[in-house]
Image 1: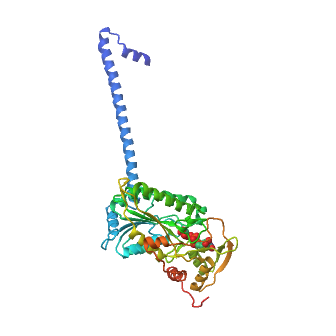
Image 2: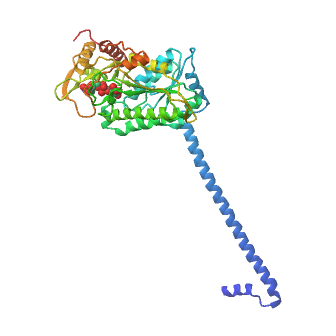
Image 3: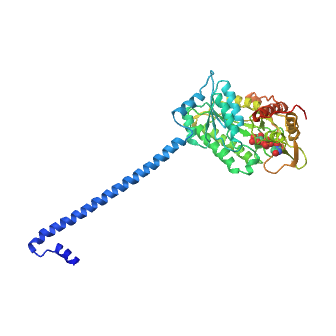
Length: 433
Ligand SMILES: O=C(O)[C@H]1O[C@H](OP(=O)(O)OP(=O)(O)OC[C@H]2O[C@@H](n3ccc(=O)[nH]c3=O)[C@H](O)[C@@H]2O)[C@H](O)[C@@H](O)[C@H]1O
């Protein structure tokens, strides 16, 4: 039945009507077909429109969340950077200090600010040691008008933005993964900060116009198994004892490349076991103080043959004077647009104290200033990167920087203990030990 109806429609009984009927049928067919094509087309347009708006909504959300979560950028941020970089003395310098919330970085930032130089800090506030100490140092810098930007030296976009905002004359690069023995636990963090981060920073410096002069922290640990004393810059540094030392040694080679190819002026400072107020809690003098005050035992390492370990402990104020002198005597970089015009300055200097002290001697001084006897465990030094002794020859630093350390370990530790007690809110009894 259904079939007949269709048949009748398509093939009418009157032949004369056939053409007309056929034409109408055809028109209806075409119309239907056309209508369904339009419908399909409209659906397709709707689908495309929906997909496009979904994608642009997603990218809007991504962009705005980046905008809202970014810790840097924007007009207000740029004006804060410029104000922190403002120089307030004739012939002042403008310095980007990486690791500015760190121990040495915070001291150098304050010293430069005090004499009227422009200073902008950069620090990633990582959790290698208590970040609240880093935040406290930042608060101190804030109070003196020094802004510390929260960011990593591996962030090339941030570095480019900083150099776009301020024509830094100098970069004091102190950001690093510090600590000799921690490299056993977290080797990748040393490569990330001390190698990759250094290269990212040097790339930014080489591309900056004008190029800044670069002063950066190497380490006494590069002397490794060298046993000629005192350690001189001409001695071998190709036998590091820890990954930390190896990454600092790599830094010396990497900075040489940027000096050679791009004309960056480079000064590498080999710091010798720096200590003092606002210091690093992972270092022996700091952790010994904490344990002694809390009545906990301390481990004192010594050599397999029973000899004491010794370090050329160097007080922070002496190191700061060395850093500032390195900035003041650094020659300008000689490159621009990725090419050097002539050879640029390349220096490496020891910054030590020149009078090594044993670890037991350090403990005795702490006991006296803390008025508490330490509970000592004497152990053979674990084979995890330590070297038995360090001792700096500072003739190069004296000639190049006029460097002359003036603080002995007793005086320096006295100042450290005074700061420690006040920072952590201790009151001591008056007995001496
Ligand atoms: O000059 C440097 O380039 C380095 O200096 C510092 O390393 P080090 O000289 O090893 O200082 P630090 O750890 O204070 O140990 C001091 C002494 O105490 C001994 N030591 C240590 C811990 C312990 O529990 N017991 C102990 O006897 C230990 O065996 C050693 O003999 C910086 O941390 C490093 O980042 C880098 O800057």
